[in-house]
Length: 137
Image (tube, rainbow, N blue to C red; front, side, top):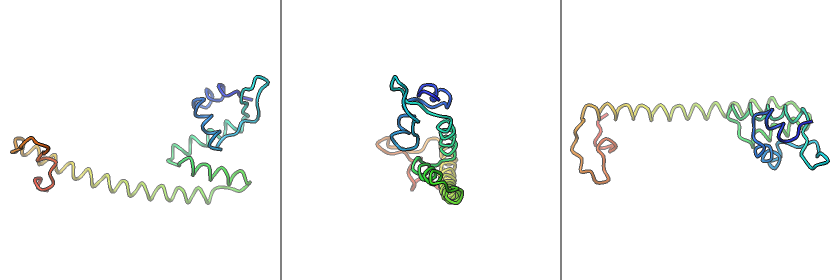
């Protein structure tokens, strides 16, 4: 059994995070010691590893909670996880497209700015390098 401090150290998360996960329903102590300390078993340690791995892949705590609930019901969560992963990939592809367009715009503006190092600027809430009408792509 782990006390909260030992579990925090072993798992690499803070005590506050463990308490937060407990309040959020992601983690449950097995009980309390005579001194009132939360006690966690090896299953809690494994659950924390699962939570951290899922977070590293971009799953929200709500998505993680939903997967854990399926697991708690004794069902394999694979179909749910596949659907979540599909959604994450689609969102990333959209974000990559947005970031690519932003990068292209920034590169174009930078090239124009470097080709026009001394543009006529009035210096009042305006910069020709940021003005879409001024920059020629």
